[in-house]
Image 1 (cartoon, helix red, strand yellow):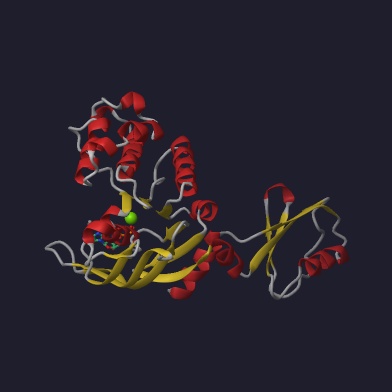
Image 2: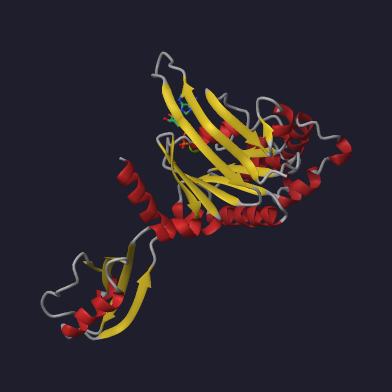
Amino acid sequence: MVENAIEITGLRKTYAATKRSEAKEALKGVDLAIPKGSIFGLLGPNGAGKSTMINILAGLVVKTAGNVKIWGFDQDVNPRQSRAAIGVMPQELNLDPFFTPRSSLDVQAGLYGVPKSQRRTEEILEMIGLSDKGEAYARALSGGMRRRLLLGKALVHDPQILVLDEPTAGVDIELRQMLWRNVRKLNEQGKTIILTTHYLEEAEEMCDEIAIINHGELLIRDTTRNLVSRIDSKTLVIEPVSPPAGTLSLPEGVEMETRAGGRLAFRYARTKVKPGDILAKLREAGVEIADVSIEEPDLEDVFLDLTRSAA
Ligand code: ADP
Ligand code: MG
């Protein structure tokens, strides 16, 4: 039994130079293992190398060096088995305009060698909410419908691993919620999910574990919970009954910021300062407090810290 859905070692990709652009090293030797059954987030800014990695997994981009195992199958040794284990919803809306959604799913199943008797075309149409659009012209489909169809296409061969490349970039809230509902359901049914995003809140909300890449290098990989706790900063927010008179003397390293409605936010390092120390200083200054809360760091903070230290 393999534990990992994906095992990547020493993965490199250099796009060759063209007349218009220089050679580009998009992946600089990445090692990454993604456990079975997880919802795994691959995070990074534009140009980090996320799609390059996904497209190598999908067999759409040829790697320059390294080793990729999908569901235990080495991509170079067992290309057919490794391809069968993974379904990819690409970032680009690359649909053939001459196929209706129903025929598009059927053709895709054919490409993956799924026999007619085992095809789940109607079930997939239903799941992606396109049952009534099965015979529509592709050009009559909205952007959101096309994206849903791409999700359906990734599922025709019932892969163990589903990869979504920026599934919610530029989609409306309704489609985003529909996607996440489907992703959660598929994960509960046992599928390993890998998604790329540059929306940090999204990764925080959806993913058990997260890897952050930038400039073709893996910066960090950890559980979402550990990632968040790695960040030292916290923020104490208070609502004073009336604005403090004069300047406050605060414990060293604490930064104050005024928020809407006269609230005051104090950013502090949790390993150095206790929120009680800040409150004590406020009491000394005669500030009466109507309400208090503490804000945890989010991935935006984690990401900023990491990219700053890596720069
Ligand atoms: P991401 O998905 O994280 O935004 P990509 O993997 O698309 O990043 O791109 C990584 C880097 O590789 C970028 O600098 C991008 O310009 C370059 N790149 C991507 N695809 C190609 C290609 N087909 N030819 C040349 N360079 C490419
Ligand atoms: Mg991309």
